[in-house]
Image 1 (cartoon, rainbow, N blue to C red):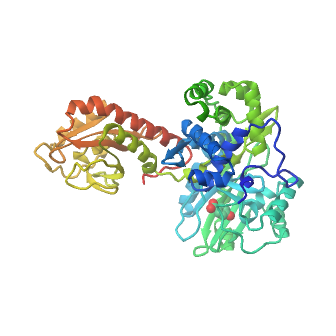
Image 2: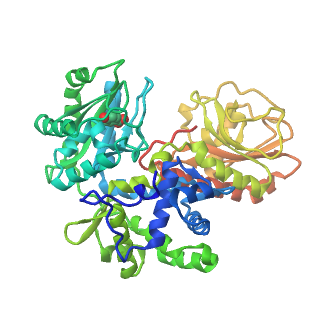
Image 3: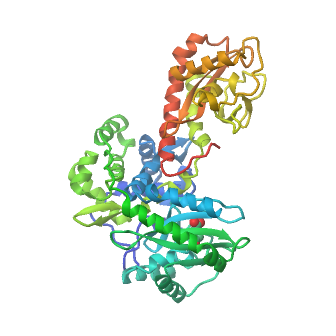
Length: 561
Ligand code: PHB
């Protein structure tokens, strides 16, 4: 793919718009790096980035070290890898939009009721982009991610959005079709094999306008069928997003979907529209603070390797959010602490790149394209992927093995889901997947301590060593203590010679979803040293994992492994 297809938007003439004189070149380059990393699935080598962007190696290095400083990529050896923190940009768009916060629960309920996948999509110029997915996919077919962009004409929602297109929109669509007949600019879909005449989609759009629903009969790939209905904005009457029920021909034909499931989809859409009508306006979230000071300090420290105009420009996207969907230049400058001229040039750059568009009353708003900055691959990040780099750092600092575990469904065992080992300290070889009894492990105890006493399943309390606590009342008292102090230290209760200390990992709601620990030979550190030297490091690690988890889990469900 030519380097510029993902960086410049096609203008109304179907040609890329000229770069405005005031656009910030380092910001455009940084955005290009993020987009190419996204399309590559989240990781690229420096030479891969050079090839994809056409930029010089020294430029790539400065951009990736700036993005690393911001926490948006990490450098794994020489590769640049997108981090969950980058999802804060997509989160800014999704929270400003509010539709996921207001409608996702209804989409999930519908998916449960129908036992089929349900998605929400918004229009993105001549494409559609997913903002929510309640996936129940069994048969072999593609499943799309939040942020994936699809060509409108190959989807069920597309004709419903196209029913509202302007002449300019249709011109842009025809130019794109002529320039890219195989949909190469849409990496989420298989290349188009059979050309469909333009008139076909024009007719589907007209029909969708008349019917108020639309079908996808295997336009993306054989077997994949969908029926879609628009959710209208109560104030403007325009399509705010489109809800789709997605199935497979092994369960429903496209016509069958329309006959059996469309009525229930429409009932759900009516509920969604009521939700939009009746929900009170959002309380404006607090804008970010201190960003300009931070970028200045980073410049001082890193010098040439820190591209301040890129860092400053990126902070502009985070000025938007819930209750902050439309901001004036003054508001953007105030929220970011940037000079007006700097904020203005960043907004001009973003408008050129199609990431920001002007809104009424001299304001600006984010576009769905902000999701193209990392969201699709990162929206599938698991807790164990989030934890692994943090565990590796911890293990390097304390020179001991570090692990993450979750409670098994029965609640009796812990299951290791991530691990960075130095030396082997246990007689059993612990690997990802290993299960151990929860009551006798430090990680098990921090997780059990969060479970209400009457809901705890402990299983049989066997003496694994002479020191194992086996008396239920004593264990219960220990768990109370663990909850109060926020960590568990288990001293030779699981295995003689083994000492381990663990702290909880909490999700956005404060629930304990996992634990992290450091395990060591009892001879290497006293119990006091564990608490004084290792516990602070362990807590810092848990805090780092939680920060990533809270960003990643804002609009997606982060699975354990
Ligand atoms: C999906 O959510 O995966 C989906 C939605 C509409 C389509 C195809 C797939 O037309």
